[in-house]
Length: 436
Image 1: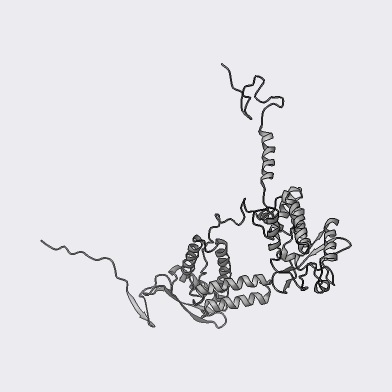
Image 2: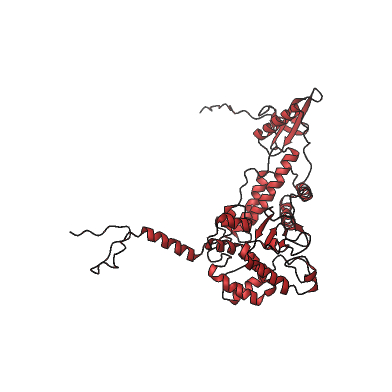
């Protein structure tokens, strides 16, 4: 039996050793060589207009594909020809860059509130745990996707909310975008990384809307005034204006920059307080505006100032709602009183001080207040945010459907129930049965 010899037409890739690294003998793309250990190397030249001489360009891409490496080389050559300085590849770790970016954003005022700083600080701790030792230019999409998958598993186990993870991803996008801009990186480690799905995560539900129904407001307010008179005016002003507690706490009742014009009833909304003694000179939405309060609201505020500022420190304070020490009230000062009053009058749903803003929107809708006017009071910038802070209750739905049914019902107005002969009358919108 004769042996048939087969020709091996597949050529074995040839490699050459260049400065300690095995590279493909021929470029896989113009100016791009494959590395035997993975990744690519680029080499090229471009004329520098500042010197009139050719400048050598070279860089190693440990994980990038050939197309990405070629894109960087082409852009770098163009930068040289345009006379634009190109920074060297950084030897900066993610932890160092993230910390320096955080400090820069605080210094230039991009992050202004204490709550904003706390959020960034906490998030960066989580991100540095995951990526801190990576060099900023070596952090790859695959690293981020692997970490994202781990967080998704924690969400599935109920350890984290998907919105929390999405908050981490949002700040990571800011960090990597800044790194790419500063160091002109060839890739962005957040490119194509999607947020986790939140469609099945409900912050507010029909059973737990974190809002009072209009019929519950009056008994709730009456019991609150009885049990917590010292907090009543703050709760009342939040209910009738929809202002956030962070905006209510720094309101000044007197002083050179008094926020309450007592003789005209005008309230200036222009500060925000989150933690400590630090105050932002604008609201959370970066707005400064005014609200003209009716006499009923002003009467409550006057009662509060006359009867509820009981300590010397409160009397000396310029604040409208000072703590007993004269300083700002705590961040969640109304949560316990609201919960206890709800229990006292038999409301079983969970309520926090955020219920004030949500209830205000529902009350304004029940009172048929124009949406534009409602937003001018609460400070919501968009209709979408106004809806986010609203809850449609069952009574509203029943009333709306009753109006629709009255339009759909096609029975004559004079028809008697069951017909003249006691039989079944015609169905709404349908035809009478035919007789043979």
